[in-house]
Image (cartoon, rainbow, N blue to C red; front, side, top):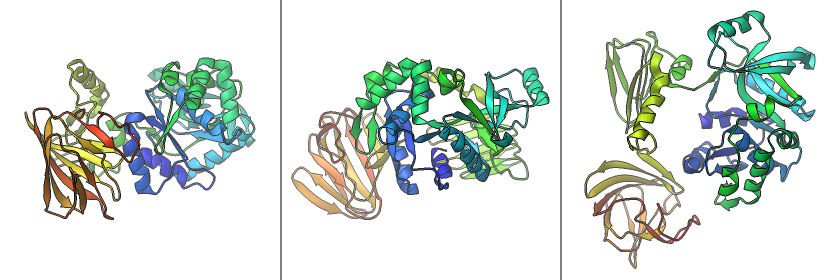
Length: 441
């Protein structure tokens, strides 16, 4: 969905290359997605921790202000579906006129139902020949009867959480209404550091910022808020059931993704990521298989998935945090099997990429080339391995894996030893500038 968001605005001639703000842990998978799509972000800003949308937007605004003091910033959440992209682009053009004039723009979605899961924006005085309005007020998520009254009265739009403003204006308003957020964001950018293609915000400065949304911190207080209504087939994808609602359904009301075999199945969303999922005689279910976790839920109860996550966390389990596939700057690895003294992984190394020169105190490794060509260093020996060839790395031996070819390199790695944790790595050299010290690869 992040990639869809980026491509949605890349199709516009008036929108510059994106600035991505993400958590530090997501940097490599996002970078890989951008490379595969041919997108070169203007910047990729890394948050050391999530502090809600106001600090994230403030950091992006401060960054843009360093080279374009009156540049216009379009804030887009990465979890939205927009069916009518042309209508979205037309709304952006209207919003840009208002933002250029110093207004703080929010985009309101024309409501199609008395939705209780969204906040609303009440329109005030008309602007731009009635295609935009001053904001009368923002309204919290209503109960059913209140939402029905909004639709009957008219003049209310769903708050889409998409914003547009000049960077100097949003920074000025933040200094007025949430000065602590503005100050911490500015300090986190100034004290931030470059790491490969990433801008790391200063951890201490950013952590000191209050956690708040743009809506609460600024938009509900400023006198310059305006709303641009738009009918663009919008949905805030907050649950698996929302994907069923917007998905292309078969004749029985099902939405399938991946290898799915269904018999007597109706009104279900089924997603299979790593293997076959078969369903027989079921209705109104959400079924999601991700390789490491299998979720089955009633479509009406899917919001309660968070309760399962809470129970996993309380039990000290890691399924809600760790995934089979882990992205790194050189590619990714995924766990295939693990036991008491062994672990099997699949490694994919990008063309021209290399792992760090490293060693392990507690484990030996055996590499088998499945596809591509590998250059391996084991001790003082450097050699090329082709498909179906292998090498062995004893405990305590310096080693490195590189891909000198033009195609992705696939390796099966078999680890054996008394301890197989990712922190048993000592780096001696790294082409990505990571710390040369014991650290997780």
